[in-house]
Amino acid sequence: MTTIDAQAAVAPLDFAVTRNLAAASPARVAEVLENPGFGVVFTDHMVDICWSLKGGWHRPRVQPYGPIPLDPAASVLHYGQEIFEGIKAYRHADGSIHTFRPDRNAARLQASARRLALPELPTEYFVESLRQLIAVDGRWVPSGADQSLYLRPFMFAKEAFLGVRAAQKVAYYVIASPAGAYFTGGVKPVRIWLSEKHSRAGRGGTGKAKTGGNYASSLLPQALASSKGCDQVVFLNEKNDVEELGGMNVVFVFKDGRIVTPESDSILDGITRDSLLQLAEDRGYTVERRAISIDEWREGVASGDITEVFACGTAAVVTPIGALVGEGFDEPQPIGELALSLREELTDIQYGRREDRHGWLLRLDA
Ligand code: PLP
Ligand code: COI
Image 1 (cartoon, rainbow, N blue to C red):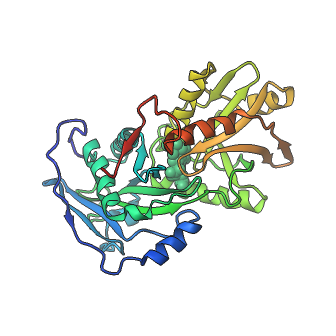
Image 2 (image 1 turned 90 degrees about the horizontal axis):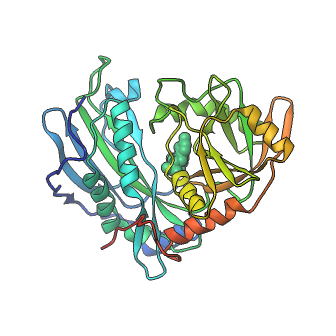
């Protein structure tokens, strides 16, 4: 594992840029941006930076989007040593392009790297990798309501070696995909399946890291959820405390003005959640980050103490939870106004429609 300190001053990277000669036509870009969906179409370029134990971070490139050459023995294919991030670029009314709290995504990628024994990408390199991609693919940032360019930085072990140890050769990439609503149908309350049989992560495991394996383990319960007519799964820990959904954090609103969200070593520290809770605190709500059991959830809804439950994350932003479904029950959830009001405030900041009083935005195209 590397001992590189991600916060230390780093030498600037000199990116070699190779333009995509087969880039999409303006008509094709316009057609995609009309109705981008989520994660289906990718921009013309990608960024990549190599890392080796001997050479550190090197060979920064912007190159045409396309298949990645990979040795069949690359350890990511066998042992899953991989991490990723999700962050968006937003177009403001004046045409400028901004991203949201990239320092937090950089820090989380570094934390994920430590857990997965991957090298830490310095924050400056992370931010510069986003700037480089926007410099060539800025035209792919949509300007429609609730649209954005979803940026997907990721890092994996590419060393061709079947011994089980941390890889000594690693690749970091950023790809981008224009995004509309994550759930088809836009913002409408989702139905959540309570996964009692499968968990996503365990104590001391990798649940706090953004690593592919966590998502792999969520796929079977997610498929089960779909078969039960649900949009997403909610996972519990071994003590029956609520953890999170497959790709979103969960927040509970109480009628006395408290907002409770799970605190645990095995869930992702969501940047959307942190930001929404900051906005709620600014409005005078009291935020409690603590364990909340599935019994407290169900009893709180039954008694009327819980007035709203919502899910949040970069891809889905804020989505009210409309029903909690499990073996033998289907419980409607109260729908309040806070989730959508916080969603509006957050997206107003992200799209430059409201003052960025916390200094969360970073302009990428200048
Ligand atoms: N939890 C999981 C498992 C996620 O995949 C995500 C999405 O990134 C989140 C929570 C929310 O995190 P963020 O708000 O930083 O996107
Ligand atoms: C995100 O919100 O960025 C995520 O990573 C969630 C999902 C698309 C995996």
